[in-house]
Each structure stands twice: as structure tokens, then as C-alpha cells.
Image 1 (cartoon, rainbow, N blue to C red):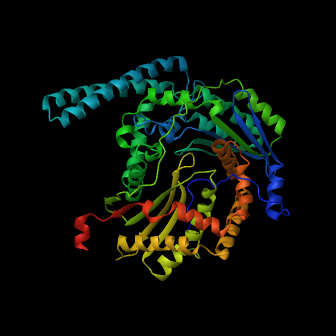
Image 2 (cartoon, rainbow, N blue to C red):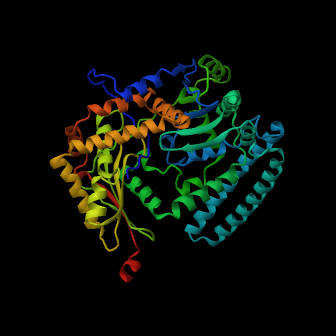
Image 3 (tube, helix red, strand yellow):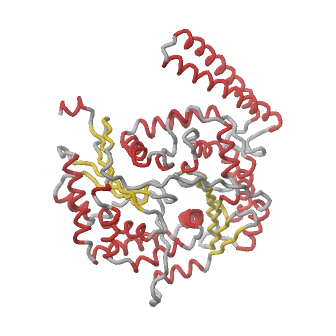
Length: 517
């Protein structure tokens, strides 16, 4: 099956005038219910009326993801997402004036602890037993002091007060996520409680307090151990991205490497917060039982006074296909063997983004897909095949990526050769009109199904607006599907998926295991 790691979108010139299809009629009705507003401080608000039930979905996105970090602060976007559930100067505290004194000292002492931890690591690396012993004593001292200080500070903390306030007001789905491109905060709640959301989220945007940072850093480190370092396939993806992207921000893991996580501090997080959590770097989408004028007035009341900030946009190094074939990544580790094959491709709004998305569906988008039929059913050399067509994000050049698990007894070379042969067949012979029509129809049907859900609508509208500057690309993409020809797909495969540009990674058993088998 096809796995999309990012929302599909595309923009381009509208095709020639044709009678409006049922899908176009659906889009026209939906677009008639949408209003876009931009406040003086640069905040963009997308509102959509859907009065099927008296509820609203509220999504707020910031263009602040791991792509905006540095090597030193890798993981800070995700860490900050965790910290922004700790409350503000008003929420999550019994007495902020008293608590603030402890927060200031805690930050200083945490920096002291980290300094001595680094000294201890260096002494051990230098095999300096005396220096290591001294540093170890300092680490113990500052850790004990910090633990005692934080215990006293917790007297003023009201744990998860934001969650409680949402809960008593009937909210559901209060959550957040961080990606390479952005950070998102979301919740659904009764329509007559929209002001509760506006009050809490405007407070989050400008008054967040990074309380209990030391404890949360440990939580994030454990999250990495459990979800990444203990999962071989995720380690393979991480090493693959690092290898193919190099110093480009897409080469860093969203959660950050362990060596970075362990030394993240409040100062780094607050710098990131003050830099990127600004109204002119955010998009709000509210979908549900709303009135435009009332909702806009509410947003202006709570978010309008927040000042805009200068958002740095650092020039990123461009990535290029490897010439000659880049050396592959081989990870020897326990786990299900896996092959990753990737090619650089343009991000939106390049037309090739859409053409290769359709090719991804043709190759691995259901039981009739080419790779599933050939490798899994006919040759029986693969246990499963998946395609990602915009990995790991859509702000910069991304990857067309194929992931395959070999069947028992099948070698990686054989599996890779068979996949390359199928790609070469597309370049040589193209795809059929029947294949293209099938995947187009399924993509339309899936999209129409998603439009029934106000959460999906709010998520997609805010996503498109944030990354493309125009939420309407959400609809333009599907209107442009009919303009794509089988020649477009063949040409995109020829240009972007040559074997000479292939980059790969393999997860294989450790040598001792392989020899025993």
C-alpha cells in the first residue's frame, strides 16, 4: 500500500475549461464556506463553516520544525512541543511570582550539572581517573541540589491544568505533533467553548513557561530509546537520511540524536520559542459550527495584540543527486531485514511532485499495484513493499522512497535488482491509461471521504496555508489530477529515478547471526 508521510498538494495553471464534475461541485460548495483573514500582526486565520454538529476543530501550526534547528540544538522543536504543555504564567501555577525565582535558579543549576557531566565524559575518554572521580562528585552534588530545588518548586505547580481546563469544557483530542517542517497543536471542543480555546492558545503563544525542564528532558530521552534506538528500522531510516542529506536540515532526526537531547536546556528552548512562536509564523484553522464575524472578532481580541517578530530564514544548502552512485548504508542489527531505496525529487509546487505521487500509487497503492503484484505475488521475493513520495517533508527537496522487506531466503541484491527493473520498465514502456485512471479515482474517493471529518479539514487547510501560502492548493491539487498524462509520469520517472541517482540502505542481521543461518 502507499504510505504518504505528508499531505499531498500541488499548484499549477488551471486546465482548460470543461463542464464541472461532481468533484468540482463538491469543492465549489466547500470553498463557499471558507473565509481567510490575515491580521495586522501577520497571523493567518482560515475559517470553515460545517454545522453538521455543534463542535469545532481548532488547529494551530507554526513553521517551526526540526528543519529550523542547528546541529547544537537538534531536537529542540520537539522538546519545546513537550514543554508547551507545562503551562504559562497564568495556567499551571498557584503563584508564579514565587515560582519564577525557583525557575531562574533551576536553569543556572541545570547548566552547572551539564557542565560537570561533560567534564566527566571527557575525563573518562582521556582515561583520567582522578579527574573523573572529581567530576563524578560534582555531578552528584549538582544533581542532588537540582532535585531538591525542583521538589520545592513543584509546590507552586498545578500539573496538566491546561488539559483539565479543556476537559471540563468538553474538549477531545487535545494533542500536538512535530515534523521536519512544522509544529502543530490541536483540539476539538463544543462550538460554544471556542473562546476557551482562544484564551488558552493565545496565552500559549506568548506567555509559556518552561517549568520542570530537567524532568521532561529525561522523558524525551527515554522516548528516543524506546521508539528509535530500540527499533532497528527507525535507526535505519535515521542513518539513511543522515547519509543522503549530509549537513542539510532534513538529515537530522526530528526527535534529535541522544547526544543532543541530553544537553538541551531552557535557554535553547526559550530562544527557539521567542524566535519562531510568533503570529506572523503561524496559521490557525477553525472548522465547525461557527459564524465568520463572531469567530474573527474572537481571534482579533485574543491574538491581535500579540506583536509580530522578525523570523530568520536561513539559506539551506541544496541537495543534488549523487554522481556516481552514493555508497549505501548497511546497518547490521537484529530485526526484520529491510531495504530502502531513495531518489531526490522536487517538493511542491513543481509539477513533478504530483506526477511522482501518482507513480507511487501505481507502484504500491493497493493489491493491483505493480510492485505488490510482481514482487509479492508473482516472484514472491518480498514480504511487503511501501512507497513514500514526499519524505521527510515538503519545504525542501525531498525523497521518492521505496521500502521493501525481503521474503525469507531472498538476498538484498536480488530484491534491489527487481525493484530497479520495475522502475526501468516504467521509463521504457510507461504506465497504462487504466492504471492512471484507477489511482486517480481512488485518490479522489479517499479525499472526499476525508472531507467529512472536521479535524482532517482543519489539519489540511492549516497545512497547505502554512507551507504554500494558500489553502486553496488543497483543492487545486485534485482539480489538476485530470491534466496529468501517462507521458508526464514516464518523463518524471526518467528524469528523477535513474539507477545512477539511487541511494540505498539495508538492515541486515549481524554477521554472526547470518553465518549461523
